[in-house]
Structure formats: C-alpha cells, structure tokens
Amino acid sequence: MTGSSISSTRSSPERLRAASRLLLLLAALLFGAPAPAATQERPDAEMRALLIEAVQSSDSFNDRFDAEVWLTDMSHRLARKVPDPEERLLILKTVHYEATRAGLPPELVLALIEVESNFDRFAISSAGARGLMQVMPFWLEEIGRPDDDLFDIRTNLRMGCTILRLYLDREHGDRTRALARYNGSVGKVWYPQRIYRALAERWHRL
Image (cartoon, one colour):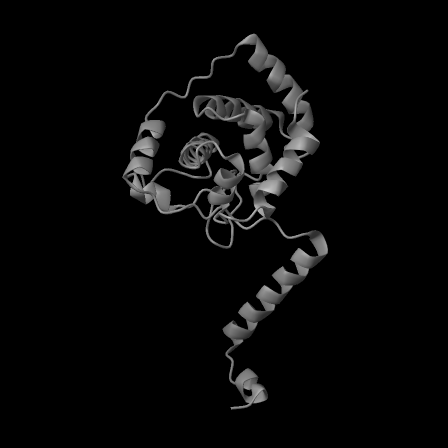
C-alpha cells in the first residue's frame, strides 16, 4: 500500500489527532518545550507506607520569624508567575512546610515546580501527571486514596516532596540522580541541570 493510499484511508478523527500533534510540536518548537512530566517509578511497599504516613500528618505551618522573612522574599520572586496574592502565599507556605517536613530545601522544590509546571496548579502532562509537582495519579490508587485531588496544592506538594525525599535517600544523598529519578531519566543530567539553572537564576538565597 502506498503512502498516499494510507493517507486517504485515514478517518477524520485520525486526521484531527495527527493535526493536533503537529500543532503541539510546532508550539513546542516556537515557544520552548516544557520538561517531560515526572514519570515516577511505581511505588513499592516502602514508598506506599511513606505516602500513607504523609497524607495523614497534620497540615499546620510553624510561622517562625525566619519563615516570614522567607515568605516575603519568595513572594516577590513568584509574583509574575502567580499574580493572585492569596494563591501565591498558599503555595509558598505549603512549599516551605512540606519541603522542611521532608528534609528538602524549599528553594529546590520551587525550582522543580518551575520546571515541571511553571506554577500552574492545574497542569496536566501528556503522560497524565498532575499539578504543581506533576505527580502521577497512580500514586493515589496505590495508597488507597483514589478520591484525593492532585490539583489541590497541599495534596500535590505533600506527595511530591515525599516522593523526592525517598528518591534522595535511595540515591544516598546524590541530588542529581534523585532529581533524574523523579523525572524518569536516571543516568542523564539534562533534567537536573534545568532544575539547578532555575534554582541559581531565581530561587537561590545568599
């Protein structure tokens, strides 16, 4: 069968899907393609237990003086990406709390969010990853909470930080490998380098 005959037998929906893919490719070339969504590994027993513990923990935030200074500083930096002050403060308070809870630098989590979703809390990747930290929905099924909302800021950040923390532990503190594992690109450095660049340019504090 020739190429022309194959093309002529395509149904209208198939042609529309092909055209849509072409438009997405052109948009990526023109405006810069986002990082591929986090394709975290399927959870094992250890990960499942950690996530269950995380979602059952208190959501309180210890508003110490240094946290207030951090929130003020980061709010100015985030203003262009999240114009609404209430949403911006909620994101920053939750990032600070969840990152600290997981033993992660909050600035690193902000850099990861920038690369993954550019702070769009309703972002959905082509692979189906959702929210600020682009968490895959299968995590919810695995921990028995299928009705939880990954577009909810607190839920998304709690799960994302817990996942990244475990990857960091499994990589014995090797941040580059842990970040690559979060993205599903272990052994490659292009994704961690994007995180480090965002960290250095926008979120690093002297």
